Amino acid sequence: DTDATSKRQKVNREPVSYSPKTLQSNPALYDGNFPYFRQPREIGCFSLDIDREFHNDARQLRYYFPPDDTKRVKFDLTKGYEKYIKRDDDVKERLDILLKWVLANREKFNLHKKPETKEEIHTQKDGNLHTDFITWRGHLTKILCTPYENREDWKMAVSLFNGTYYISEVETEESRDRRKNMTSAHKEMTYWGYKFEQYVVSADGHTPPSTEDTVNNIEGYCTVVRTRLNENSLVFSGEVDCCRGDNTKPSKNYVELKTSREIYTDRQYRNFKRFKLIKWWAQSFLPGLPTIVAGFRDDDGVVTKLETYETMKIPDLVKDDPYMWNPSVCVNFCDKFLCFVKQVVQKDDPRCVYLFEWNPSSKRIIYTVHEDDQQTFLPDWFLEEMQK
Ligand code: A3P
Ligand code: MG
Ligand code: MG
Image (cartoon, rainbow, N blue to C red; front, side):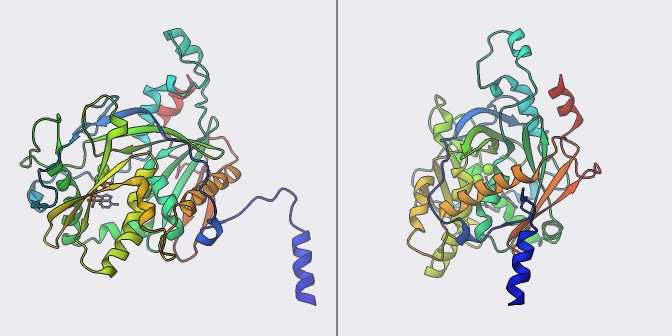
C-alpha cells in the first residue's frame, strides 16, 4: 500500500550519521535496571556571606541541633517574617559562584597527579578540567524528576568549553510569570522553610538555636562533589542545610531540612509520596546526602513534629505502587539526557549556547542553537583565567 511505501522511502532518505532532534521523557522508555552511578565524593565546599561574597571554606556550615522531643514541638514559622532579608530573584547568578570555586580549586581537576609545588600547579594547567559536565545540583534534580513532572517547564543553557559541558538553567517565561504573580500568602510561605532551619540548627554545634535572629536566604554553605553516571563524569555543587555531630567527616553527616504540611488522609499521604518525596529523594541522592529531617506544619505555619528519612530508603516507600515513581527511570533519563547533550552540542565555543527546553504538554526535550551573545553565560573573567 502507498502509505507504507512512502514511509519506507522516507526512512531510506535518512542521513547515515543520524543526529537526534528531540528526547522524549515518557517514563515507560526509561524503565530497567538502575544505571551505574559512582558513589559521589566531596571534592570541596564553599560559603556565601551576607553580601553573597564567595569564600573557599566552610565558615557557613551549620550544625543540626534537634529539640529534646522531636514528636512534640511548636515552631512558629511565621515569626519574624517582617524582618526577612530576601535575595533579589531578578538577579541571575547563573554558574558564576560555582565558577569561582573552579578557579580557586584548579589543581583538584587534575586526575593524574596531585601537584606538589606551585610550579607543578602551573604546568598542569592545560585548560582541560577532565570533567564532562559542570552544573548545579538543583539543575540535575530537575532533570531527574522530569519523567514524572506535569506542571513546571524548564530551560537549560549548555556551552561546551575546553571539553567540558556547562549546564546553566534559564528561567522560562512561565516560571517568571508564576514568580511575579505570587500572592502575598504564598510569598510568606516560602519564608517558612528558612525559618524552620533556624529552629533546628546551631552555628557552632553547642549553642542552642537562636530563633530571634533575622532570617535571610543570602548566606549559605555548599558542597562540591564529583561522580560518574555511566559514561558521564560530573562535578556539581549544592547547598547543604546543616551537618550532624562533629566536624571530622562532615560530608558523611550532612542533613537536608524540609518542611511539609501535616498529613491526615490517605490521599494526602499518596500526594506527599508522589509529588514531594520524589523531589526530596532526587535532591539528596545526587550528592549522596544520607539524611533528610522534615518538619510537619499545620496551615498556620506551626511545626508540630519532626520526622527523619534515610535518603536511600525513600524509594522503598513508593516501590509497590505503579502510580508513583521509579528511581531507575529518573536516573536512566538523566543519563540519556547527558548523552543527548553530548550528541547535540558539537561546537567547543563558550559564546555558542544550546538551549534545551522541556514542557509537560509535549513531554519531550527540544533544542535551539544561539550564537548571538544573548544567551552566553560563561563570563569573561572565567574564560580569561582558564586560558592562562
Ligand atoms: P522547604 O523545602 O522546607 O519548603 P531547601 O529545602 O532546598 O534547602 O530550600 C529551603 C527553602 O527554600 C524551602 O524550604 C523553601 O522555603 C525555599 N525554596 C526552595 N526552593 C524554592 C523555590 N523553587 N521557590 C520558592 N521557594 C523555594
Ligand atoms: Mg537548603
Ligand atoms: Mg532544605
